[in-house]
Length: 406
Image (cartoon, rainbow, N blue to C red; front, side, top):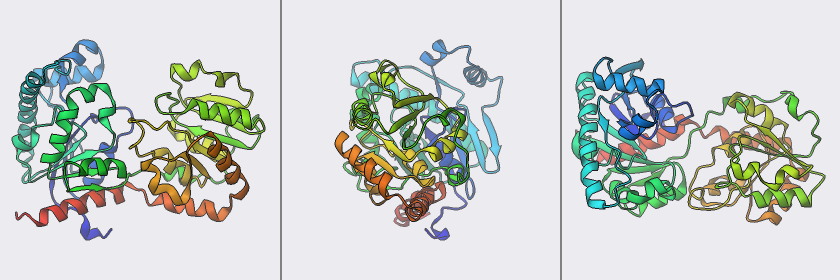
């Protein structure tokens, strides 16, 4: 991407699922930070809703929101040059349980109006003009913001197939397609989600995924982690949450049984299904537990082959598997379940469709791995930066805006 393809000197308002003070990594925060290098950015936290207030009253983060709503604290905070964070000074009603679509939509519009008024006050204070409105998967609370805030350009960002989750599915099956259709353009972090958006809006684009891979690129010479010293090669490893809704336990069992000479190492927190699975009885399966993100490159470096044995379902089919980039950045051979989103990794990964092809692919990866292949994998992963992903978003916006005139 050329630098002249970047948006510069604009005012951008970002709304979405994750507030700035969320503890986990967030695509949306990374995008806002990248934009703030060249533009003024207002990152808006989701408004507090009544249910969350009742459930988490004593949480310090909720206390901050209450103080802003009561007026004892300013909700507009400058985080750094060109970047502000807004705690909305309003509380919205929790309405998702309402079964009647029409009533839900009426109350949702009311919630949107309060939210929009709060954002508009901040826009006025900051002197923002001709805003770009970027909505990260927030299909309910931000449904009407295009009509209410009158952005110069409105963008819907799809990074997860939300309708696979019951909470979003209930009213989202009607509202998300409508929101995609009325947005000026849609951008998605996987080809599957870009195709999904395209069904409702022809201005839908795949913009890739940024990853923070610096740590993973610098693993040469790292020692084997202490809790892996007693585990001999070949080590087949997985890093990430061990959730039965996303991972295929049967594939792991079959690999363990068919190849007793291989050792399976699983790094990450387990859900109850994993905790109670027969995998814990296998002599060649090792559960290492949760690790600090900064330690993960060291674990991946100790693997001979990395795997991502996903179950293919509505939750996983369109997801961009960020861990694949992390595996490749360390230079490791990767065997992953074949999904639509894995298409872009085809040249650098083995794609498996069942337990037998997992075993065949892992065997092949162990036999044929070379320093040259490792170098190619690292080069490929290095292209997946936030700078490149946001440059793709900028490119789509600029093309769209050529049709409009300031």
